[in-house]
Length: 114
Length: 112
Image (cartoon, rainbow over all chains, first blue to last red; front, side):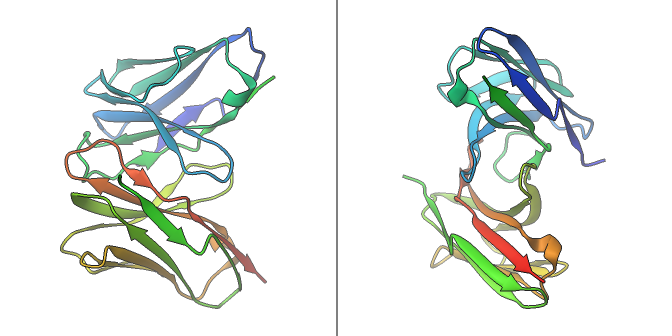
């Protein structure tokens, strides 16, 4: 199983809503990542978790709050988002955080903020 | 500053034809280079990964080359199919870093 599963596939939310994106992998990977991707642009790294601990936060606004409940799950909690936060949010995982590891990506959650 | 430049930005070819995509990088120290295929609205899928000592790696109709001296890589697609229409992204990792450097991608369209 080389799959990273993201839910929901699509999400539409207002600026006052609170929602969560979910990501799950069962490959035994110990590093998990959140990326944000705007149309026709490469993914931008947001957060990295290594062994369930947040190791990198790329200066992401506090309206995005990551959570890693266990080694298989990664959540991204959303609150008071802005329309410019509309994007494809990608989750990825790798064996560990080492640079030689291949990152496996999920299919993404398409987020629209109204 | 680590950078990855890809060319062309977009490419249109006829089904059955071959094509080659280019990737130049200035990432240092170099660890590995990966090519991903990303269909519209989907997550990237890894095609190949190459380390410093590898010159060529194939995955079906996809063949990637790496010249670590000139810091260039290419992705050659043979006998293109309509399903090859996608964005192809070159990603270079630096030694010991979690944070890879992404190219902006080449958008490939295969016409029947």
